[in-house]
Image (cartoon, one colour):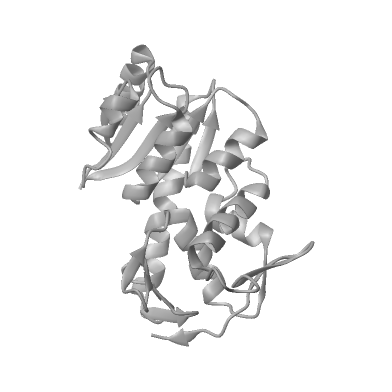
Amino acid sequence: MDQVILIVDDDMQLTSFLSRFLDKHGFKVRTATSGAQARGLYRADDLSLIVLDLNLPDADGFDLVKEFRAEVKTPIIMLTARNEVFDRIVGLELGADDYLTKPYEPRELLARIKAVLRRLDVNADEVDVGEAPDSLRFGGLELDLVKRRLRHLDEDRVIALTGAEFTLLSILVQRPGQIVSRDYLMDALYGNSVAITDRAVDAHVSRLRRKIDRAEARSSLIQSIRGEGYVFASTVEVG
């Protein structure tokens, strides 16, 4: 089945070129030149990935990332002309899976797209081989490793996770009480081809904590170990 990429960028010459370029590499491409057009396309069931320029004439890119992520799990790669760590961290914290700073080489965008999609495929393969349990329970939550879904047991509702958040949480939950280094998590999330700081991992952890920690809890399920990494500080049971 063809993988479909949605490119959201107001530079029509660029989107036209990228459409031809990605088509040659086996992808189907849809384009939007505004936030309004993107809002009409991002819910499509067959979308594999969204490439989103943060600088659109009619919408704030950060708002779009937040909006898209609240409704779909489709991975998002941000495009930004602002080479500032703060912007990248904000975008990742809002739920984007990766970023690329303009100007960029089309081949680098292709590599980023393939890397994000490959991580999703690898994670799916890992839970299909039968070596891991189908689901794990902790703190009133159930993480379904097969359906890639987190459910609140008491409220019987699904907690939406991005692909990066699911990967991060599944790694930690399957190693309760063990310190997992930032380097390990960065490699699992981004591989070796992406030049990104470890603050990106911190941003994902911060977002995860807001989703899984109870309001009345005195400490987080994910504990920071200064200079080393993170540890999942909860009893985990096989679901």
